Length: 457
Image (tube, rainbow, N blue to C red):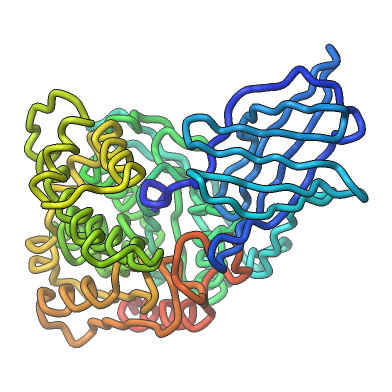
């Protein structure tokens, strides 16, 4: 999931001005065509008298980004982002910083007031809990990765017959995330683990390799490596001898991993939350098409960009030698039949520059065979407004490919996004602005389904 979401702002450097009266945190909302983005500038004065600044973008999960800032006369502030052609210029007046935010020639008013942004997350559980948890570790010896996680026992576990309580291994989406799948102040896996524990279901959630307390090489890891980490969790849960059925619940890329393990007969049941049903390159192209359409870009230009993107992704997957990212993009756009705005061409070049082993694997991987080979009970769900893994495309593919099983449940939830929040547009920029972490209906359906298919009596 984090690999797919792109930050709008990246600020770098420091200052040497003297403006003691503007030190502190300043917060404001940037209105971009109706979408509001909270920004916070943290202005500090060091012991050497120099003024420093960092940026927080809470709605995008960004904190403490170094900022380049100049201050004149103690009241006029200028913050510059050269690599993104971004400038903020404001002046202190009536207790506020009043100014303009400009990027690539487009200017927006941005007034800042003292303070920070408090994110309200009412579903995040708070102690005391009516259940017990245990810190555990397990190892993927093939990759020399040791994973650290939390095993949550359901309420009344000690009164249950041994070997009857189902346990669910929870697998995060793309990008390195902690055991709570924390994003934008939301902790979806903590919320889900809490709900399941209160409904008779054990869970094991863990920090991704190289994150939190887990070790392992994350830079070179692909979805297959992440699948081996999840398999280590499955094996650990089975070896405890404490549980009955062992299932896998995965979100986004985690849904792919759930199907991988289901196809290999390693899971007794799986829950795919917004898991792909088509190849990775198709996911990325459709993602970009939806995002560009929402910006109002002319259809012919969206088509040209997506055609060029498809060519770029194919070259990455094939390992085609490229003289330079810029030349590769120029070739792709010529073949697409249209010149692209520089910003879109730069974005394509950036895709090439950041082609990691994970991306190369993701582009080439097609889940068709794994979905077809999954014989265990499957719950595959998605949000109707998901703009990262389209429900219409992926849920229908899963429905078509999945072998018949009376226990299977495939469902699309109206009005929900990729994180299963009740939303307006489904765009990623909304994730941090929404207080809800997971729609209650989704929590209820997952618990009821697992208790139906996962209980061993």
